[in-house]
Length: 418
Image 1: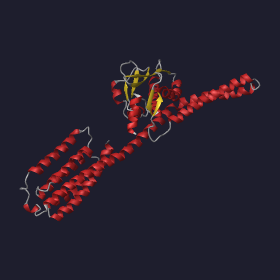
Image 2 (image 1 turned 90 degrees about the vertical axis):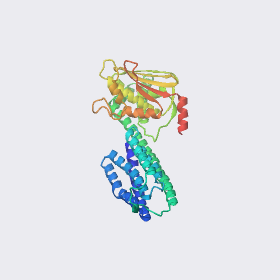
Image 3 (image 1 turned 45 degrees about the horizontal axis):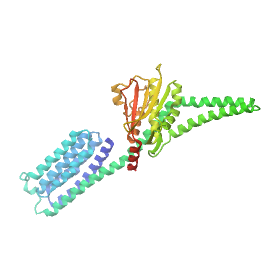
């Protein structure tokens, strides 16, 4: 992630800046003029220049300049100290930097940087100092002490770099998890917003039944049989409203993390249909289910419910203007996996759209109808559940297929994770 590499790089710049400042004092004390001039120029010019380039958005030049500068510091310092002080140990830290600050998919800057470190190492261990004025080379130095100091210093710097990498990674994992939770919750609210008109209509119907029946109660209060029948009608209407409201409250809850339990898949599908029922009825979409009996998943039922709601809502939006309007939900086991298919009467999805469909903020809906978060959030949820989702191309209609590992395998993964 780019924000992660940016943070690591800035911390590396400040670390090297501080290290160069300390070494400039050390080399000045030894009387090694070339080594002193090199680290002083790095402290005064190159480190600030790298930081300026980074802050101005020129990230690739900044990082290449930083890495090449670090390698040249080591090489020129070894020249100034006479090549006998084991300065090549510092190349270990230098080769770590490109791995931390470049995207692993862009290999050329990583290989270029490591290759440059290798070249500088060869120069350091093979070339003599005949081109350097003798007065620039420190003499009568305690070589064994400096060798040991360089070895310890190189290991310490490598560990500092590794600590920066691990500590930044740990910090950003928390930030990413928080952003993921926010994205999930926002997608839920977006789904509820898109369905609000249908939900209001669905609640209004039983309310109208209750209001009409209450008026009839006064007429039939002396007829026990009719009175009880009408109270039963009121109870059923109220239960319908309660079920819708409880489903909405359950769906819109925010939690600190996923709560994995063994759940019946039929119950998850049923809860999803309670939430989406208003929208499917509003657009006269027939919903059919074919769920294998007894199927279970080790999952966060609310998150899987969110995935199904996203797929059903997308299906309704895609087919609501068609003459034939239906959605079919299938669930069965195959090859030791639990398979869930959400199919609609649409003609399918083009290859071009399929390549982008799980990207954040990509949507084929008109402005104001879609956020582009639904499917990207759904894929993130399924990744957490070790499940896969794809567009099934072996059928003529639009069909999304989700494959979960078997409940036994899921339970083992959850136990290992905990």
